[in-house]
Image (tube, rainbow, N blue to C red; front, side, top):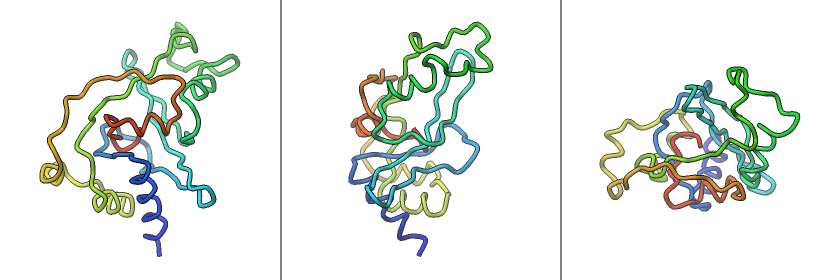
Amino acid sequence: ARLVPIRALVDVIVQRGYSMTLPQVRTPNAWQPTLDSQDHSLTWPVVILYPESGSQDTLEAWHESTTVGEQLDEMFGEGAPSLDWDTQREYTRGTVELYYLSWAGKPLNRTQLLHTLSSGQWPDQAALQDHGPSRQASAWMRIQESWSLHELLAQPSCVIPGVP
């Protein structure tokens, strides 16, 4: 019975054109997207890395219809708390830009994705070597603030590394 909601989740991920691969960043929990049973919208956990400081934020719930700009307003807009480690206050709404790593890895096929989301266990790297075309070269791609999370995740070069 537990597989029924997971199958529905995988169906929506595949229908939306999202691709997932092995995680590249550790998160505190075995996070995965959640599916709203009423409107079939997805809410994703998202990791934001700050390379200059080696820090990261983990957002537990970013709805796929929320734009990047709306999320940045919430995190860095007027009245938002500053980051604990940002003592110089360098990270502000006007200075933060978001990027994603294109072609972050070989996408999981539907069977692998179903197994991963139902068991919480990611396949090993060797399992990904045996399917799909060779991976494109990775590059950092700037994210447009007008994009919704859905528009970002549906980019052909966006292969979600565990969590966005």
